[in-house]
Length: 145
Image 1 (cartoon, helix red, strand yellow):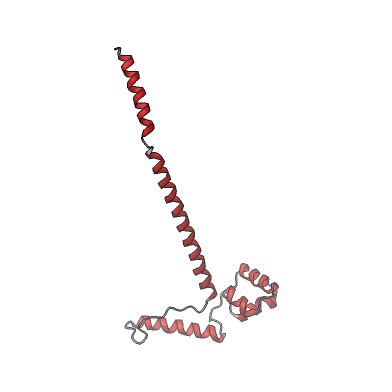
Image 2 (spheres, rainbow, N blue to C red):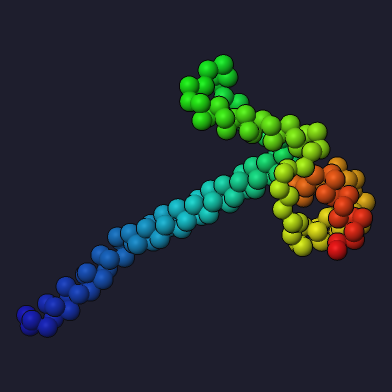
């Protein structure tokens, strides 16, 4: 037989045999697609959880971390910092202003005025804007000036 006929027969046989073998690249593509979908879903779940945590922290301005050992703090510097934090928390609860008051940013002023227009109470506006109730009353009274 001629060499060209033998090569043609071998080529036809290889083509026929290739139809019976499964394509492994389709399996790899499917695995990669499933992996990317699962990563996308996990990312969305994490974003949703992070948003919930951020909202909870914004809604709870008196959030405090409780330590397991309240009775013994070995470092005196830590004690001083804890006392300063407690004094600041007490001052904010009683409505006393901090010794140095920062000017209120214009964005917060416009937010306070908008919340007031929506009919929210001064306490609610105070919680949402992280200002004291006195500062909120000042902003409303001044009309944002």
